[in-house]
Image (cartoon, rainbow over all chains, first blue to last red; front, side, top):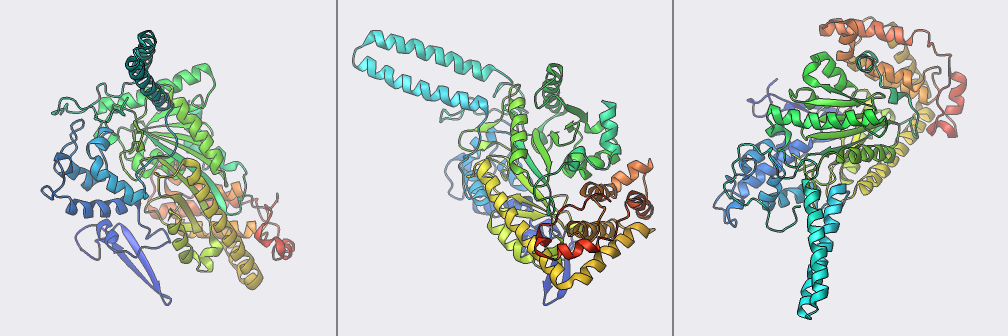
Length: 207
Length: 383
């Protein structure tokens, strides 16, 4: 059955409206259905998350077309993720990101998408065991580097040497953690479209 | 292995469905699903065959070593590649909620399923891994605990795609963060009969939850069965999400019980009529559509919960609910059936299933059910 609104795409959603005991059924495609703001219970007419995302992305693409005054290359809809080659345009049409690095590369646009969907852009739940260890190491390293700087400043060189050894040890542990299991960045990247050379995110959070 | 596999397709219901749990008069089952991706690999829709096999191989190795040790949450999982299954077999897994409809169509997908079918691992679905735990009745916390145990066990052999700020990274941003979808399957016949479903839909939406039919997105709410799940996965921890979904569920349970009390109090003869008609249809019909069967099973479940009809325990009715599904019917027949042949086969199967379970007229129980206990009916005992 064809969508009763656009009459070109197949209908995938049935919307049942009951007004004063008068029941009306309308069969719509996803696009036309998500354009209506009236979907209700009965599950036959509930808005799926996919539809919600599609409507949101459709709206957003219009607002962030290249040359729309967005800062740098990342804001442009035609930009590709250097790791997997996915364009933001393709993401908006299919609703799926290509790889973990898309989150870094399209971070600017994704923040607004995430805020719309979840009302938040900050994860507050569980973290993987490996990440917990990495975070602990990173925090300890940060503290030790500050202590090292202070010791050098105070010309306590013996203490500084001790701290430097501790730092070396922790750095080795951090590297071992990354190397353990399937490495975060080793292989598996399709196409090898790495144009930018250093694809490491710049805020030092990746381990 | 073949034993488990035969069971997987030949038994209409999963072993876990026979278990008991709190609030089973309204809550059929609870489910927690965690989405996970493996660091360093593109998401499944970007994988080539070799990479997809690598994901399956990683999980397969973990299961094999757990099985060799003989313990741990992965020890009892059995892996099947979806392309090794026929389309009817894949569809039965969908009907049992062990894989998603989308996953059934995935040529590079696999599933690892525990013998009791309470735990399933969808591999190469929308994300590399989807850990799913199903439990009878209202047991969200317990389901999360089991899912976390599987999650931790998997992590001993792989590294997850994760970001300190965004949490677990998923192909679709609607899942990013906790990547947890928790849901309860509710039987809400009295709320539907009293036209209160629409009013409650507003409440569900306000509490960041979604309502769907029995088979998820786009499925019909046949048989008065609804799936309510959390909508957001970021900004709330897993336990905060479960608390929210749990309190919404309690509210829906209260509303449903109160509507049931109202029906018993005000329309007892009509309710009884409806239940006994359902019994009549299911035990005598010769051609039975899936929709009619589900509606009748819903009426019988309600009648059984309210003590109107005795001798029908929940597993027996749940069995009927699952054995009338198209793929199961066809597997049982050993070949594909036209829709009309299915309706005929369905009618005879349901008659057989209910034969010998003949309810003793439960009229004596009705007087009790219509009293103060109506909202918290006891399980109808043995025949």
